[in-house]
Image (cartoon, rainbow, N blue to C red):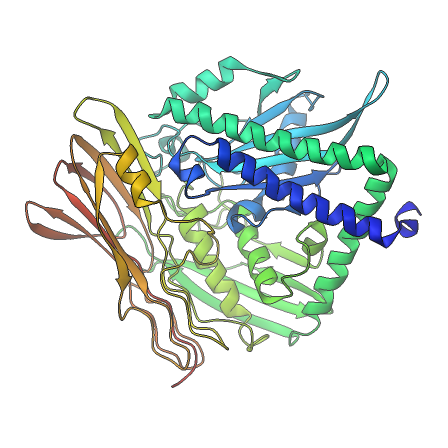
Length: 531
């Protein structure tokens, strides 16, 4: 076989070149982006796939994006095939339908098929893909993440797979469609251009490798790379205590009641792991439903976090893992359930739930629960001159205490890997002023290794009016400690108007006016071990 006979040094060169290419894609997106959410917060992810739509390299970007991209690419290809079409040389496709692309409407996925062009023919060699969070894609509220949306259509424009580029030419009518459904049309087209730049960068790097080594060697090296990752991950799973483990947690509904259950049964045996979510609550009419790709992302993230970080992340890492989520549950909902919060809040709780299920199988590796929320702030409106604006950010929380170290204060934990929005960017581009940004002292749970503290971050609207959607978890249920460690403190929201401070719920939409201040306190992490 070709794969068996390839020089191992060549395999290493191709493997590391692909990893660097995926990182370079991310740099191209970041440097070309218009919106602070992508340029400054880095809310985007990039990956490269082979001709069989198998993940072969991904950058160290956002776990919830990256785990869903392989599932989303396959679903996109199936959706295109169902219409009798297929990707052609010179194409680039765009999609944001969560039930196809795998996260939520704000995450726009751009896919470039990579063809090796010969004399009169072209052979598919792979795909270059990027996913980025666009701060507004229409819908009922600015930022497209309403805290109480009852269905997908209230969350914004739904884009089925469609050509963004044909014969290497951008299709202006598609760009116009996306622009016309956003409160920030200039940023939407600019961020699409950035994603185009990223995907073209990935294509160029893959084609350069194929030109250097030949397609046959390139494809043979891919088989070796995937097999090596599978062997390495199975060897890691063999070190876990085999058995069947269970854990259940609950998410908060619109009234703060912990009524939406996540139930997982974990089985570890023979270098493989399977998870069964039977018993999880049915889908709900508010936006914490998480499409299957998001749930899958949480599982992949946890397995990767508990094993060797030096194992390259690719399709080989997925082979030892199987996941069953009953259709119609809120972790695998049926269309058109609303899903904007599933990508952010439910992904975090799923990660903590799966980690806790592993706690007895790998007690020396599993931390206490993190703050368990991305504490989303989604805002927008019109300034005094009538110009519209939107703003989105997630906020760091307390990381749970770890078996060998304390938790970390105010960090983007688990399923998010973004930065904060720089104060300078907020105040330059938006009619707001940051009033407070500090650690929420004392919110981490006590323990041999205490949990990290959450944050307090607040800002004031300077002019005009608007609307804020706050979407968070752990406002009534505490992040749990582990091995005798204490629970972390809950998060909280407040609105300050005319000097009066009003507490808000964890999931709420509120109108705001000039002079109003929004205050967000994020949850702390649980402590690990008794003092």
